[in-house]
Image (cartoon, rainbow, N blue to C red; front, top):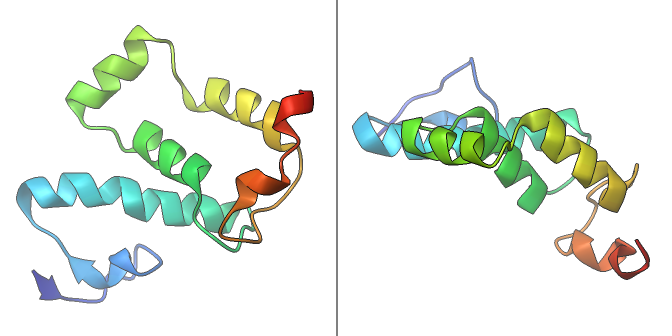
Length: 102
């Protein structure tokens, strides 16, 4: 793994050049960081990781998501019902969600 700045991406993982199969795994992590930034969140949380997997899934994962009709829009709809407009501002954001009342 050679360190190389990649200006097309952001975040910690974007500073590294990954090759082959490892690259496929890291794409979801880089996408998770992008999603956290786009959502103006201070931390990468489970929802960002899930979005990263949905958006950058390899063929096998994409087939599983398709089988269960899991799309970005469907996931975001459910996320909004739990999270609302709250931002991730701590390393334990689930503690701030009022999930039991929903």
